[in-house]
Image (cartoon, rainbow, N blue to C red):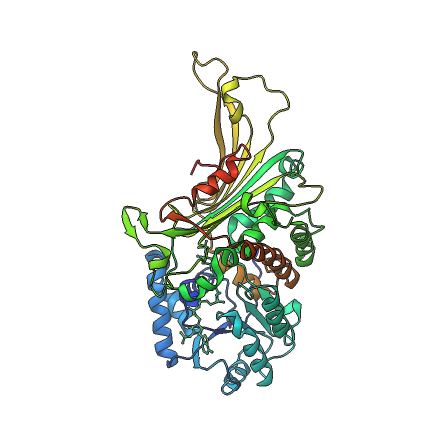
Length: 494
Ligand SMILES: NC(=O)C1=CN([C@@H]2O[C@H](COP(=O)(O)OP(=O)(O)OC[C@H]3O[C@@H](n4cnc5c(N)ncnc54)[C@H](OP(=O)(O)O)[C@@H]3O)[C@@H](O)[C@H]2O)C=CC1
Ligand SMILES: O=C1O[C@H](COP(=O)(O)O)[C@@H](O)[C@H](O)[C@H]1O
């Protein structure tokens, strides 16, 4: 099958020297270029307030590529082609002066049809001002697009303001709200797994599934982002967006087709059906944690309150675990256990679907807890899907003992020649193609905030402080007790 060429775009990158751009965006764009997935005339304009000319900017980008891309993937011809696409303009984003340079740069595109694509790799608080300045300077036309990063705001009210400000300049059909978890290979595979395999699709409900776990464990701490993170906390930084997005992909009803709005309509229904966590449930079904000093891979690491720039009386959570429910026909009575935290023993993002046991059990009573299938969907590291099935333990002396074992699809082994692309590669490519199904619609952001706001209001009212957990552990002991009280445990076959 011949591959369709990616349309050309003029990508104007605000925040061109920031952490996201350097760590994620240039490596992703380089890989796209190397794989022949950038339009021949695609160009990239870096915008930041530091002084640079095109050459010194290219050197900064080259340095980050050398640091982040494996040696054999750094090919001189590709590097030359990629760097030649880059240009730079120094700009203070807050005032309209200088924005005309973006208009002029776009006017020089060799492809008069290519859309100006604005990428806002900057704090959400200045999205509105940038959009207004772009419009005032006459840089935009009816094809221009904007890509914005999460989190959109700090709560429902601030997200309304930000979305209104972006929406005053761009229609929803040209706004691409990033949630990079939606670009991860295995998350994409959830759609295929659920809707292409009747074996799973027909079982995907409360009559066959007893409970679901979503774990997003990070090894990193605050990485110099204390100023941002302390205002947000793990609930706003990770749950409001990434974990709730994973939940919607898992729990949504089948969309009528793969159109962006067909999928997003179904995701919104899940967010609307989330049962509020309030009253006594805030104590029983939610655990907040904050890491203290501990050991990671044999090295001592400081606690959250000892990190650079820390305010030593902060009560911001760096870990959260919760049991939540989706109150609809498909999921009535099925708990979803979520946990995510910084400074955990390993980087691990995985979903575990626990299927119900057989109605009548005939094997060894001691093995009763084993006797159910689990579907383990691993997002990172080592993307893959494993179905835990039970077989007879081998050997003559074991009788009818059961043995759990995986039917395993490890993407790296199953498809060894295919490099698994980073989430940003896929999402940038979809922006260039003008396809929105992997981006978050405004109402999704707002329903997610509504649910999170109500939870935070409950914490504040009850003044629930975070529980301490040592860096390098799986979070506060209370997060284990939270699931144990339901007679279950976090899946541990890491
Ligand atoms: N970093 C990450 O891994 C992730 C980031 N995000 C989101 O991406 C966005 C960018 O994050 P990140 O790269 O970490 O942030 P950084 O602070 O590292 O980068 C932001 C950049 O924007 C520039 N900037 C900010 N305000 C202005 C202004 N008024 N005029 C000119 N330049 C300005 C800063 O310039 P200067 O250095 O001169 O201050 C800085 O280079 C945020 O919305 C964040 O929430 C989302 C997911 C992951
Ligand atoms: O959006 C964010 O995500 C990262 C985790 O992303 P991952 O792809 O490495 O799992 C998190 O560290 C950061 O705090 C958050 O803003």
